[in-house]
Amino acid sequence: MDRKLKVPNIEKLKNVQHVCEQISPYEDFSKSNDYFVAAMKEITTWHIDQCDFYKKLSESQNFSVQSLKNLDDCLKIPHLWAHFFKAHEVLSVSQKDILLHLTSSGTTGQKSQIFFDDWTIGSAQGMVDSIFETYGWVTPNQKCNYILFSYETESSSKLGTAYTDNFLCKYAPINEVFYALKLTGDGGHEFDSFGTIEAFQKFAKEGLPVRLFGFPAFLYFALQRMKKLGIPPIKMHPDSLVFLGGGWKGNADKAISKQELYSLAEEMLGIPNARLRDGFGSVEHCVPYVECNNHEFHIPVWSRVFIRDVETLRPLGFNEPGFLHFVSPYITSMPAHSVIMGDMASLHEGKNCGCGLPTPYFRILGRAGLSKNKSCALAASELLKGKSS
Image (cartoon, rainbow, N blue to C red; front, side):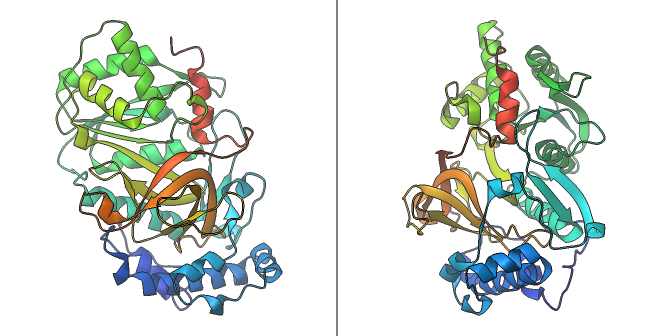
């Protein structure tokens, strides 16, 4: 973090401060579980005290914060579903303390309205700082060109993905930025596949590292267009970085595996496999999950992950598919400290990965949601219709 952030009330949230200030993202959980549970007690008490809705929810479930004694007890914390935020706005701080307001959807679909106070957005950004530092992706002395497979932003944009991708440009000085989704002038966006290919070629020729961020579908369709046009492979600087996020969502019928996409990027852009990564996150839960060298989503120390049975919501063990349930004390602005996503996933022991990181990891298995609950990636994917051939 650029500055020392403070929780809104250090007396009530001292363990929240402690957990979120950890700068080693993937330390063994055994070193931090006690602090984490203490932080979850504090943040749950905070939301009960600060948010009438959450207080009533807790009372309706006869929930007592004193029942939180170990990590498994965090399953008792009254949770919200991610799609709840598409229809409701609930705050645990006053409006005057809201620093940032982001939405999750693009051109269509229901929008999650997520509000951030100074602490919440600052702590989430600090987590990204720590992860990028851990992987050696912070290069203040090396200029980069950027290709953003996300929405070209207007000054008033509240779109979460666009905000995130622009934020990621701070880790290496900007030489030039190219947006793959161009503003059309009427509030919409259009995918510029030919312009993207020209940016590939121009930046490769310039010889600076290139950082490619955003939705994987757009990268794939640009690379596919290159091959169809018979454009020969190019060789980008070896320190170039591909960091994707958002998934394929509505383009499942056109999606290829991550391994196939990475192989295509290696072939057509000359970027090494170790520099091809995916990220997982959402505006409803801003803790960053970033692939390791073996392309697994290890859980950082600032959160814990449970898998819930799709019918009963009972907690499942390792290697069993179910709903992805995130628990983290980082958020003071809204009661989104225990959120069940619409994603299907499975949880795995860290030792099974082989990359050396000790924390467990999860694998995304698909989406289990109603079609009307469109995410940012789904809205963006609609721009690809008619542009993939």
